[in-house]
Length: 168
Image 1 (tube, rainbow, N blue to C red):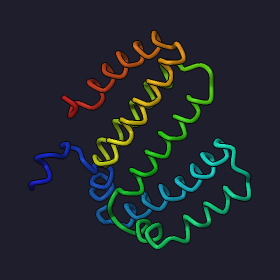
Image 2: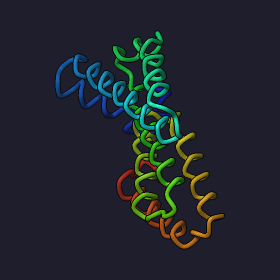
Image 3: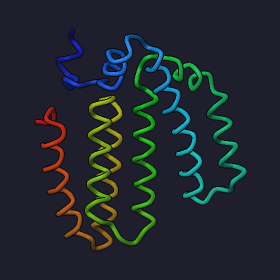
C-alpha cells in the first residue's frame, strides 16, 4: 500500500482496533458519532471562552449540526471526526493556556501528547496542531516564560519518543 510510505505504521489505528474487536464497522460509526458530538461540546466551549454569548454559541452548534458534511462524517468509517475532536481539544487547551497567566509543564506536554494522538489518528491534521503549539510557545516566550517552555519542549520530546515510536 502506497499510503504506508508516508503515513505512520499505526495510522487510523482506532478504527482498525474497533473493526477487529467488534468484527464489523457498527462501533466505528458510533466512535465517529461520539466524536462529532464531542466536537459540538468543544465548539460551544471554545466560543464561550472567546467571549461569545450563549445564544450565538448554541446557534453555531445548531449550524454545525445542520451541515451535510457533518452528518455524512458521522456515519462514515473514517477517522475524520476523531481527528477533528482531537484538534478541537488542542484549540480549547491553547485558549486556556493563552488566557491564563501561567503555563505549566503538564499543560505544554498535554498539548504535545494530543498532537501525537493526532499524528497517529489522522496525519494531515497534525500540521495545524504543531503550528498551534509553536504559536503558544512563541506567545509565552514573549511573556517571559522561557524556562518553562524549554522544560516543556524537553519533556515533550522525551514523552513523544517513549509513547509514539513512529516519530523517529
